[in-house]
Length: 279
Ligand code: NDP
Image (cartoon, rainbow, N blue to C red):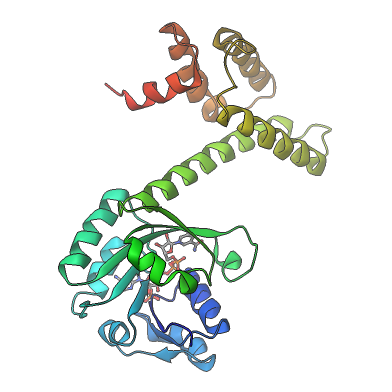
């Protein structure tokens, strides 16, 4: 028999999770603050609980997918968490997750935080590339791994409850940094005789190759010294100016490279220490 799941929160993500567990044959009890959002799921086989506390009482494995950490405290205020395995899929900070873990453990629950690396259309779709980082109770993760792997892949990030949120935040910041660069690149070619589809293809190919080189620590070094790269960025800024594009998205990184060169460093790792050393 499949593990029963209690799911609190039927927003875009919660609804996708619910459908994945129902499709896989897990008995599912759902609760949502606004009851209307549960109606369609009831027709698909979910049991709808009248209160959050009732939903929690319905299963050992309790999953919350609410808006933010504060809404978890509000929704679970009068729920009995004794002996529960609480999985918190709300996006938050590492310290919020650690604090929520202490709160849950103080109420007799085991706690696992999750950072969802997927959007709702990827949930319940095999090989979509989506997955969830989990951190906190290894025992909870091992016990419920099969159920956790139904909506998306499950990756254990560490026993520090903050590890999943840290991984999630780091990957999303990296993604937005890449999006910033891509936006700048599209602005440079906009209005020129450049085929958009062909350009997108070379752009993603280039980013794939260069992120691999950068991650291997080979982006600077003897073949491409920082002094050469800083000189080249001046050319990039002149191209940007010629194209009439705001340099605001790329300038901060170019400045960081200049500061690293000015202090005599020549390694990509030095940029990290500059960012952490904010004094
Ligand atoms: P939605 O905005 O679609 O849904 C928010 C949910 O939270 C609703 O069920 C809402 O209930 C509930 N809620 C909000 N405030 C409270 C409260 N004070 N008490 C009780 N319930 C409350 O969000 P998503 O489903 O998209 O996201 C849920 C979580 O998943 C978020 O933490 C988000 O960061 C994370 N996530 C979402 C992704 C996405 O692409 N959607 C991707 C990765 C993570 P009501 O219906 O009553 O308003």
